[in-house]
Image (cartoon, rainbow, N blue to C red; front, side, top):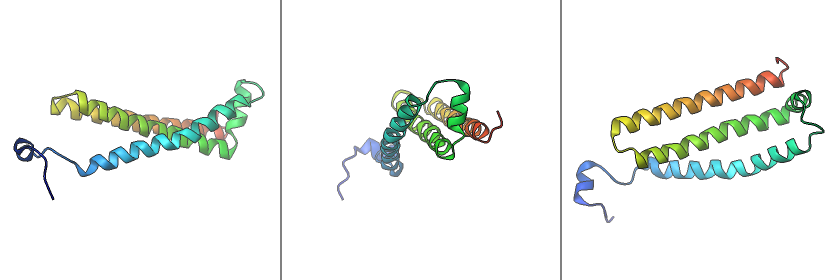
Length: 128
């Protein structure tokens, strides 16, 4: 197999990472999954009789709606995390700052996923 990397890139260990294609495809899959989920969410909210708190809680108490909302929360934050990681890797040159920023974004993303899922479950099980 031909190696098209420069000698300096070979010495530094730079080049194609096995995680790069996985990251690329995961971001595309999350974007693809968000299309029908977002359409469902927009139409579901638009079809509510009124936008009162009681109607939204009743709507979210349905198991199907609760599961769909949990999917939106998890997939949205995963997609955002992947996109922000690419931006951080492209624009922060210092390895320490880059790693720290990526870890911070990752922790915030997972925390927000957990908080969103917890909130949806609490509302759907009537613990408001």
